Length: 409
Image 1 (cartoon, rainbow, N blue to C red):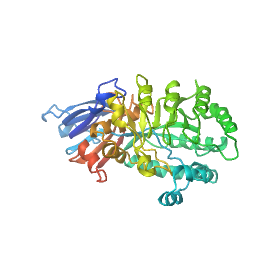
Image 2 (cartoon, rainbow, N blue to C red):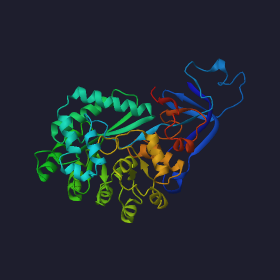
Image 3 (cartoon, rainbow, N blue to C red):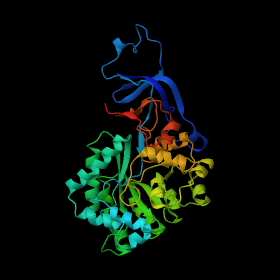
Image 4 (tube, rainbow, N blue to C red):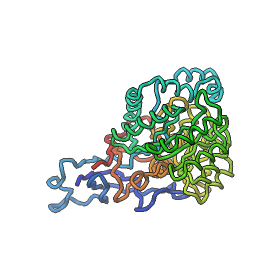
């Protein structure tokens, strides 16, 4: 058994069986001051308030294992869970950054052959080993910043060979790191070069059985200028019994992607920069997690999602980084949490739940990650002394992590 003791604040406590929080519950989390937490075989065995030290207490120095940690008044919290990333990609698109500065929109850059197609061209010219090496740099950066579970999408291959190369790289990452990794087949990210729209939709459908050998989820970019509701419906119908849906929706327009995602029991519908009351109503009473990506709003100058209104309507929301080369080149989930507070007017607790428990739910791992719960993985952040959730979002660039614990036995 390993102990973490002298914890100033233990935050993120949830009862067993709570896999997500919604409505008013999004603004609540269990907190324990002056606490201890016990870990056995990589899982949270128990926790509680610090007792006085006496001869038969495991908190006496003579009883602690060499692996035990004196938190010295630091905060212990569940590690960040990032349910939407495109972190496997080749090269850089910093030239498009200059295009954005010069006033071109995301859609205009894509129409000129940039954007997703640019990343696809770079990926095709990059060996699988080099793609893995480049991607691991970004993944390690995310882990150093406190991410303990992440989802990674394909979608820059845009033909069978390229998409399967990406999925193999994601699988290799999954086997190489202590963080949890979920894989998503996003063949329907854009129309691959040399295909008509219909031919490419058919190619994606035909690739589903092979993609399912590696992937956990299937995704479609259901938005203006990319894939229609009808395309999405056909792809998700073909994916039944193979892969669980997660949908890109409502980034560029109110697309109908939320509704088709709900129809197919998508685990999450993501982006949601542009939504109406109809999307809120469609999500009520479903198992689908609305997931908002404030990094894209920040980088592209898009509207921020209506997170507060979703919560007031009784829904939960998750926040994720959307780490990708074109619209959110950052995987810092602490910054995502801060944007939730600063730009979306979430309370620090609402934003905290959005980047931990609810984001874990949106990638299907909240039975093991996202909260301080007995039996869950001890996937934790230990901070230096003096931190709480408000300060975490307020001083969003001040170093705070003393140690990241990944919950491996």
